[in-house]
Length: 360
Image (tube, rainbow, N blue to C red; front, side, top):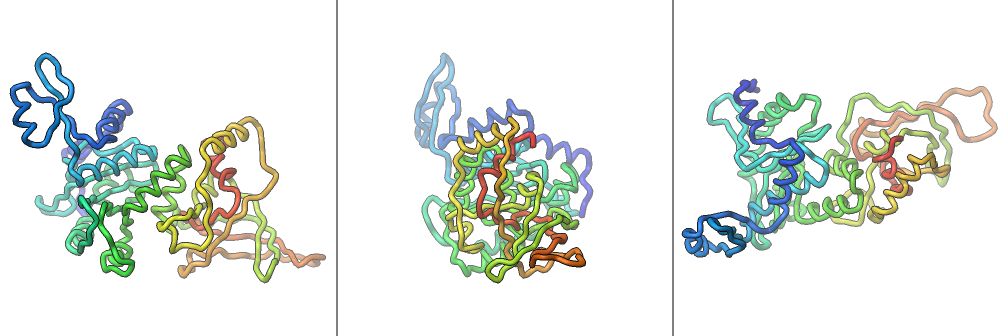
């Protein structure tokens, strides 16, 4: 791994935006299907030949528009998705280049970079103008080559405590469920953001509003540890229908991070057979207001911990020995992995996410 020079760090930072006014202007330009330029009047005819259409005019210049190329459109859509998710450190342009290896030629241009409070997302985009199949072996091999180096470089700038997640975003490309590309991305821990998952995340943004970041992180880092320390919670264990259940109290800030809501979409088909409806935004806002006004809910949230092949992601119960009990229930401690998306919220998602923007 290389250590970036101060000059290299400043060069990377110069291609990142963090001021709200500049981000708003950039979002306005990217959140459209049109590419707009301003040209002198005597160049209008030349640009018309390139496919531009005349817009408004001033005394000296003419604004002209044309549809963005499909590749640029995907990059802009992904950038806007992160902005709407609440990220406020994003790349300013397509000229962000990071040196990932010891040689001066070991550099990589990055399509989209979004820096959040807990994680950094690096996105490689690939779009086609109509549905097609393709083999991305070479492209994925390239990502595998620079992945560790780019991770190291970005963590030097924004902190080694931040996780770095690589995303391969595609539009109009079809992948078979058993394709080698899918297997390769899974092995490399790269999230494949296809047309379906892109639409799903944007639907989450509309429904979850400011609390969407918890659901997004659970989707991106499913079953990945937040920390090595397990959560230790006092519980009452009982039996019902041949299964164990646990009654306990947990802080909303903790449940929001380990919780996950399954929705009826192909993105989640492989995870579990039960699904929830998307949240109702107006109801979510009302619940937050109710909580901050001193309201509370005397009923329980129902969650499910799915068993996992990885023993580190399974819960463990340690009973507290009692001399005599007049019930089959018993007290003890539940040890829960501190990991993203391990607790499926079966009932009560509005109440859980109502706490996301609450003082409590």
